[in-house]
Image (cartoon, rainbow over all chains, first blue to last red; front, side):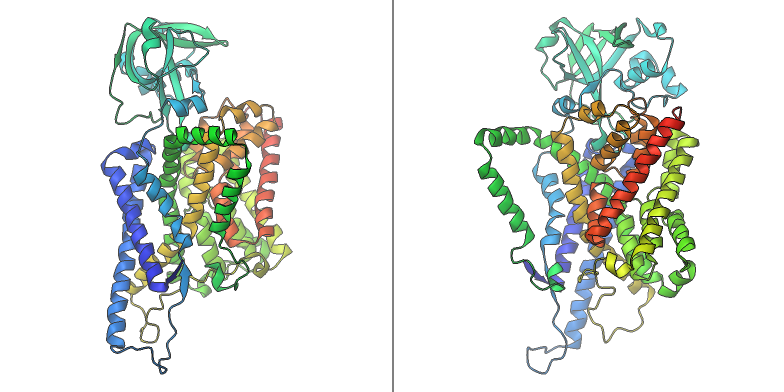
Length: 258
Length: 344
């Protein structure tokens, strides 16, 4: 596929604008948080403005140069006298690659990571994730405010765990079933995303719920109940003895950001 | 693009060759294997899309900043200025090259176009290589993010010092072995230094005109390097989605294997150096301290997408050394830390 200089540049500009539009689309719909940690959202916003500036500048430059050329050579014909060289031609292939994120972004329905990704990565009940990165403020959040991540962090970093036994947990997560677990147990899981979903790390809290087997995998549930402490591979791990398991809508921000 | 300089060496365009290879593979593998692979791919397609877009969305702004930097250097940096700032002397030039990231805050995506631009402005080879390898770590943003992840301690100091030492020694090896012309690929035909839309009539460009050129160069380079970002992100995503992740963790035990596993993980994950410290934090306790350090030192120098971009700029042999030296030196550093500083 050969393009003239001008056509190549115009295609570049259009693709840059389309990428900017795609970023605008996921930022405005809030789906950006399905892809990256909220901490870096401002970078995506800057990138959107940058791509828009690049594309708009090029279209404007092309428009001006066309106007200038028309002025300079009003009756340009392909006769023998002309001494300017014709614009070179370029292959369009290198531009096609940047079409891939656009196609994937617009054609494949967006979906946050769920149970199938968790089964590939494994769900940690006592992840070493961000060990030592717990702040005193996080320790002081009330038990019913704690997320899966907060609970696991506490059990990773604190030594005196008995004080947490019997506290009522109130968490949201998706259902993940590990084949090694008995039928009345499941994991209420969340993905923790530090930077972007490429480093997503599935965390889960064990839930005891007699009707657990009836829950569909990947379903989002709100679990309430007192916490019991058990030993697993020599580590103390929290188990929620569920008093209620309620189906809920998937949260708009499905991941936890450590 | 290549065809404009090297007249038809290849008859069939590469994309068609890839397609042909895929078709041959498809028809020669047993059908049940193909089918199960296909169903696995379809099952994982939404995850694949999400992870790919995650890497792309995270990295694209950084690539954009690098190409804008490259445009700024091209338009506002004269060759004389660069020659005055960087001594021709091998050792001092290379050391300054390694420290240049403190002034140009770029990560491993943005540094490649910027370095190539500076080579064209006459930057000595050793200084350029040292800049290429060190800048993604030795810049204010990354040092700050490492400090906020690990605290201002030994990990931060070792990360900075080792990156600088490896970058400078690789730079010195390059500068003493061969001239730059043998190592760099020729400039692509379609990145004209200025916009030659109307060359004879153009008067000395005004400031607005120069800014327009900066944006035009950035656009060109964003597309030229962006495709390696896309391919690199596709490869990294494929390996993440189709290989079980705890495989590496289970291999990575012991003071030596853990270092190798973590370095491979750095290549596979292809995370931007500005944020990789937070990711490394998650591996404390799973991997040895030397492995974490090697992840932080080697990852910014070599990963899938940056290696593909290097391949655009350097010839194959230089590319090999550019990956091999940092690999061996980071491995050595990680192993030494595990034996002599196990409490890091």
